[in-house]
Length: 95
Image 1 (cartoon, rainbow, N blue to C red):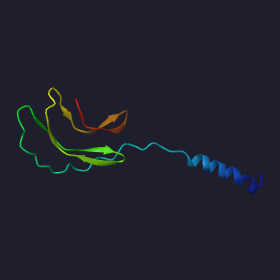
Image 2: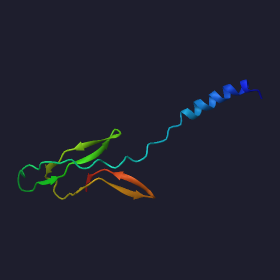
Image 3: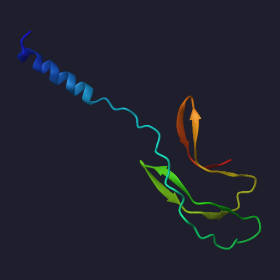
Image 4: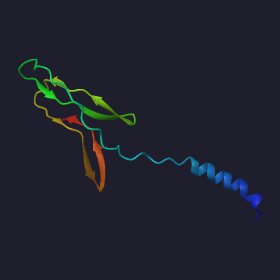
């Protein structure tokens, strides 16, 4: 087969392979926590939820600390977890 006959085939393959997109991997570890000033407790039943980094739209954003009254729940900090040999970032959440 002549080289000039292979050129369209090469273009077709390049176009098909160019459309392959791999899903992004887990996000990198978050930056160090930011320093916060904890204000006075607003009253009984309130507890402080530390500020934390959250992964949003391909970047980390800082969620400031705040007072909360979520009775019967516990804030679980964001962390990496080993799932089947791959470390996956787990967002902070209420449990």
